[in-house]
Length: 113
Image (cartoon, rainbow, N blue to C red):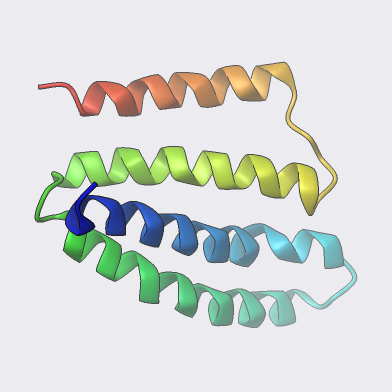
């Protein structure tokens, strides 16, 4: 797979790891003040943006914006599924997988000509 097709996928994967921690990582620390969670999340999100922006910039040379968004959604769900089970100790149930599967089908449709 050429660089311009693979790089966006890898960058989106990395950005989603950061974003998942920014959005959901604080749930393990509910006793921490909300303001602290917000500031920490913004700090983590900075790293997410340093990967997401290049992913979309590089990816736009071979993928359409809707394709990039569809790809990002599927990657987000995969990262979140692992994060939820591993970090939050909340494995997904059948209905979560079914819902995520429907979103994956929707993303697949975006790639059809």
